[in-house]
Image (cartoon, rainbow, N blue to C red):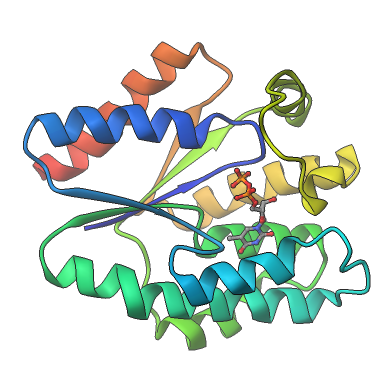
Length: 206
Ligand code: TYD
């Protein structure tokens, strides 16, 4: 079982997933959490190049290819071996982030970005994708309040960019309804935890 967590900045996806994973592990499920870009040493090195604030000359197609390269390495070294062992792998971001950020917000086009990703992943898709949906203004306000979190290059994009990302994710949820579940991430932390838990649990019980 491969579960991916998607959503804009400040949607609380990482903290919610951490709590939900712990609860599921206490129930006996074997869960491994990971993240993109990154998740393995090689993929983390690619992440550093992508998110480095000094790389202002980064071309958008280069960026999309680097994300796809990092994704490939992460699958080969981590996701696929763990899945083979029967573990439930939960990844903070995956292919849909590339489709939303590079495909739509950066304007490359969803189908082009999908094509390079299908090459990178050999057509491997998540079994379940949880979209933490929230208005960009609310998400960014949460980031600003959370001073411990480092601000990366993409956080600095203007608000329209984040609106495009949000709409892109919602469109992807409509395009791939068999694997997407949309959560209202503007609710309280406790409520989102319950919704997230219920969505994963119902898929695990199937
Ligand atoms: P990160 O610090 O992990 O942010 P977050 O906590 O929001 O996940 O930075 C990841 C950034 O990379 C985030 O702004 C989204 C972006 N991203 C893409 O643009 N394309 C991708 O394919 C992925 C995986 C991430």
